Length: 204
Image 1: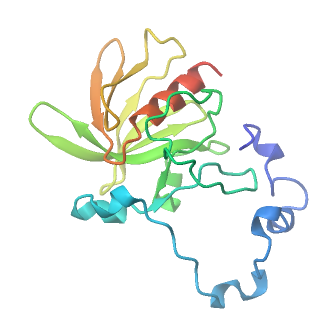
Image 2: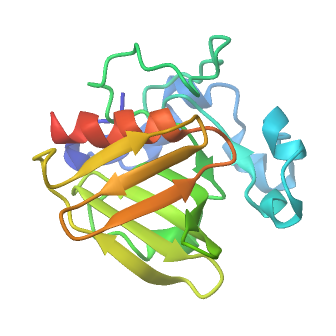
């Protein structure tokens, strides 16, 4: 599991990248010839193939855990609607959608992403695609993916009266604060995972 203390993460010690490269996760990687090798193909979720056109840039690299040295396959239910797992696994990433340097600019030093995905923010007559990001600060923001600007910072609270999430279906959920209720649609059916991630962080 990802360590909440950055100083204890692989590669953070005095050996730096050498310790990270020797981690069991990277067993078999020839670092000297890395640039000349053919990159591995990424597995694509079935739902990604049936999504609408510009969702394809929302590539679905989908590990169940980051940082514990193992990449495990989903156990059949895809984790999409299961709510029986322990909410204590706040470092579990349901998905990293095209996570690269462009999202890093929204993080502070030592801050890490717990969950991120492209969703539609639903309003009365329109919907807008945004990148919803939850970090370990804790911080909950949504970003315009084309202009790369923060469109909203949802005020965090460990109190469920001030910040709560309601799931109406595997694709639809609402994030509620005293002043605002925001509706979101996640085409890849991660509504329950968003609920578990937020509540898990509130109960940390």
